[in-house]
Length: 187
Image (cartoon, rainbow, N blue to C red; front, side, top):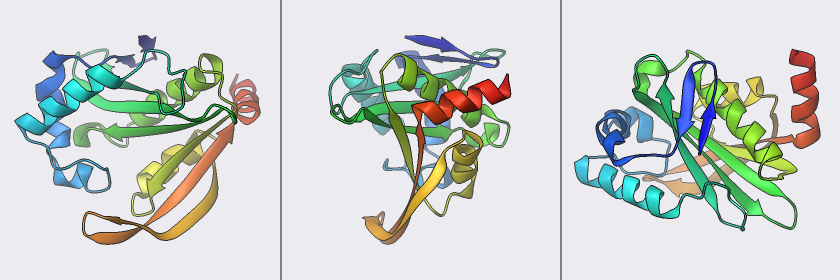
């Protein structure tokens, strides 16, 4: 599975990505709000193995997901990753998420990759609604969601006891019709 954008190649994870993945998965500031431990060589290898074993090129069943890394076109370096999953087949509902290498934040890469994942979810997976759930302590993720045209639908107070503290989660969502309308406005 490959999705190309202006600056990125979104592709399946490879064993050879381990060093690039370790750069951001071992950064406590990056993984603080993500359900991963701070990575070391072994945990990154387990992450790669699990992703390669379970990620689906075209998620079609409830619980299926796709993980794609972001390969920077100019350098070939992996600078982040996205995931999209099916939450409900009956309601054609999915969820999207992203994480960006610390040296490549605030440069539009998360928006670029996430836009491509939303497009894939609506066009290829047949989703009607896609949500993004995020820790409210990460305003940069909320900004990406808003730029994507997602609306904030809820803020859940102390919904998870996560890495030793209660955290609040924000839920952003977009419908296929809203995504398509936003695309036509951008053209």
